[in-house]
Image: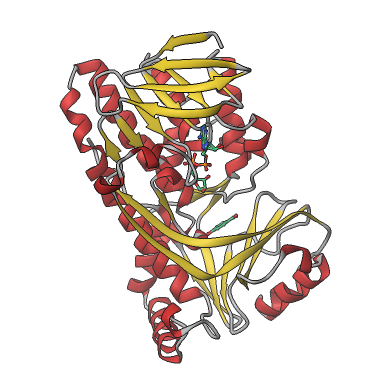
Amino acid sequence: MFLQTIKTQVAIIGAGPSGLLLGQLLAKQGISNIILERVTGDYVLGRIRAGILEQGFVNLVREAGVGARMDREGEIHEGFAIAVNGKLTHIDLKGLTGGKTVMCYGQVEITKDLMEARAAAGLSTYYQTSELALHDVNAEQPSVTFNYQGQAYTLSCDYIAGCDGFHGVSRQTIPQALRTEHERVYPFGWLGVLSDTPPVSEELIYCHHERGFALASRRSATRSRYYLQVPLTEKVEDWSDDAFWEELKRRLPAELAEQLVTGPSIEKSIAPLRSFVCEPMQYGQLFLVGDAAHIVPPTGAKGLNLAASDVATLYAILTRVYQQGDKACTSRYSEIALRRVWNGERFSWWMSNMLHNYQGMPVADMGSLTFKRFMESELNYYLQSEAGRRVIAEQYVGLAYESV
Ligand code: APR
Ligand code: PHB
């Protein structure tokens, strides 16, 4: 096979939101980059993900010059609600945080906007690559080898951004003895339904219920996204649309259940819940970004937002490297990124514990009655106290990005 050699400053592995956003920002600063993706663009866009964006993320997308459709079609949310066995408490994000809000705009839409902007700018992306491997990441000039359209390639570069998600190859390139992986797998999953029906509420509603957690979310005035906590043993084929709507009605506050508009699902899937962090997030010239380094359960809406803060940190570092010649600052990436990651991890874990029902789970998985009582008390305390609601609000809108 003929070997083709190409060159760039930053090799980006993965065309998910992390890789695409980083690529767009670097290109704005004149830093060349090539993205290598395992699947097709359409496949990437077929994965339905969450849709709550922190202000920091929104600003970054605008800085990348890709915010026009988001600003037109996204919804600003000034608050959300938590329902405990049918009783609603409003979390006034704007009032409790001195004016901060979140943007409701699907991850799929952001990804699509980023892909289109990248194509329009003529930036290089190789889709459907295979056999991808990282080399010499600990040396001055690392490289990535891969196959593309039947041809073997070597991409030589200064730095590698591992934006290849939880199942990617980048993290595995860090020698096992040099990384620590923290993991908690939750004893339940989320069954999600997307439907072209008017959402039951203008704001998101997180429901703690004796039958299990539920979430009423949305994508627009005509598209809803709902979730139900289900045992991990459940199969998506066993859930008819009718069964889903009936169970959702049981878990929503009664007045909302009455108003719920149901319809055929356009997507239905079960996702497991996991907390995961890899420390450190860098090795030599390789930096892990987003899901490649950490996973959170979706309860705090932090997955995409933590990916964005990694991107912001790496973008600031690489800009400094290429504009000021400060190569030493690269050593600070992991330390800066992990501080914010651990906060998001803790918040997502805490929200998950308070809002789900662990009844019937093994005691080792926190299924004891004592744990249930602790969590009921915790939720009750945080919701009835303004200080408590502020603690939730401050983290939901997102902590400030640390400067490099
Ligand atoms: N070679 C090339 N690309 C790869 C490889 C590989 N060996 N392995 C994985 N990829 C690609 C995947 O196909 C995927 O498109 O890397 C991409 C990673 O994208 P995501 O999993 O979406 O991860 P990330 O971009 O970090 O997005 C952050 O936020 O809301 C959360 O989990 C949600 O995807 C979301 C994440
Ligand atoms: C979603 O709309 O898919 C969504 C919103 C908020 C979450 C999780 C998922 O916390």
